[in-house]
Image (cartoon, rainbow, N blue to C red; front, side, top):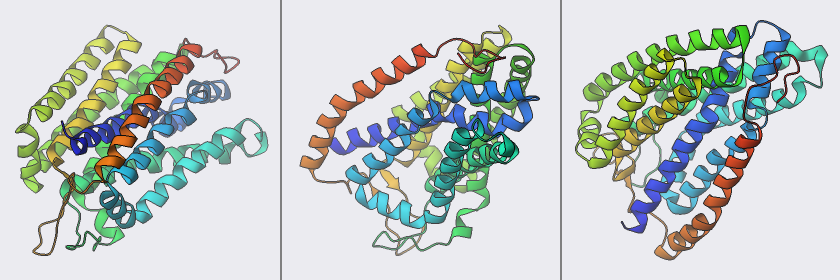
Length: 337
């Protein structure tokens, strides 16, 4: 495996890690006004993600930094072309963080902060999927790799369908985490929501797959023409079936882990379909896709790899420590562990 492919895989792992970890945070934020029926339940939902949400966002920051350092042209094109969407998503993440910090200190404005928590979770949960949909569909750009489209052009039917599919994925994951961390009526509500959202996710994945075959059939063909694509597809299907099995057996933790496996499979499937392109161009005589070959120097990639091999185990160890420290159910009365 050469360095360019190594970093393509590593960036994919970071994106998948973010989707799995911060995905349930975003899902709970969007479900927050629908699952919680009283102040104790709202406090319990916030406590379910309180110790981990900011650490989970590190995966997004690291993925962006890795893309910038390893594949500068891809970073420049996507961040310049998707700038309004990225700013909206970042605004949502900031709003979510502010709402969580102020909510329990400012009781007079709690409805405002509850609304901010919902909006701050919904924006990134939807827009990240829209961004992925545009990358899979192909980005309008010229031979120099400059984005030539518009913001409204990003909101095309295909990318919106992918965005809604991603939203359903996060909602299912959030409901699964809520079931793991809560008890009583809130837990029962989360279990029902998890089941319904899981079916919605499955239907949307099928619709997205069909639409992908119609709109960008070469992506689907390329994905299933590679071993990585088949492995991702097997993981996706296995995760979906496994999650339903765990739900039927009323095993909340198993359903959550299975949901995480399905997310990794879906991210892997998208990555396999795009390879060797990082940012494929829309069909045009002047368009040129940005491939993994457009990477930084070998020295840069080697130095980054050494840093990653040292830093990644530390990040994983810290994550394991935090999740183990706050394992178990949230106290439904106190809203604490």
